[in-house]
Length: 171
Image 1 (cartoon, rainbow, N blue to C red):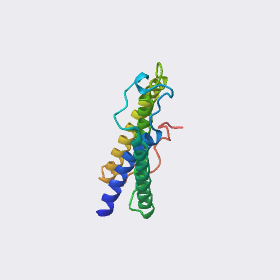
Image 2: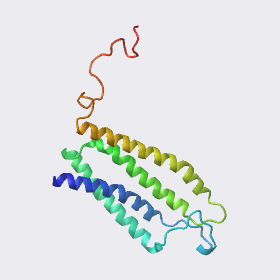
Image 3: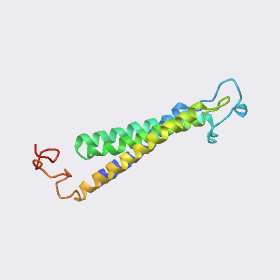
Image 4: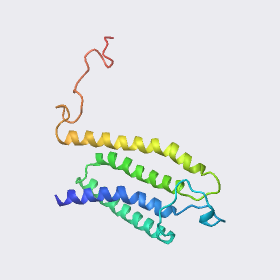
């Protein structure tokens, strides 16, 4: 039970720490040459002092690396089912894309922030799709674990040949 709890915490840390690393390591990407009070913002950045962004990013990077290492070692020892990477990868990607989009949207610019529009137009459907994939795969994995897979041993389909051929026609 202790190993399972460590793996669960590591998975949660990875999902949170990866976007934290991206957000912090990117830093505030304001237009250079004008004070922030004269820049235009699609969304005002949060009140986090600029000197804290890099340490936050480095802590996020270290936590993500440590959590990833724990999960990979768990998978290699057989304690972590590697199929759960099919859930974790889209969740981590969602966080990373969201952190990048947030930095683009909060960048101070002169005039219109074209990047913010692109981030919303492209980032939103990608993030939504990744979240749906993660949820669908989670449900499938939990159903198999609970034995609710239709009685076919986790395969989800009947074993053996399909009567009438692959397309259901005689031919």
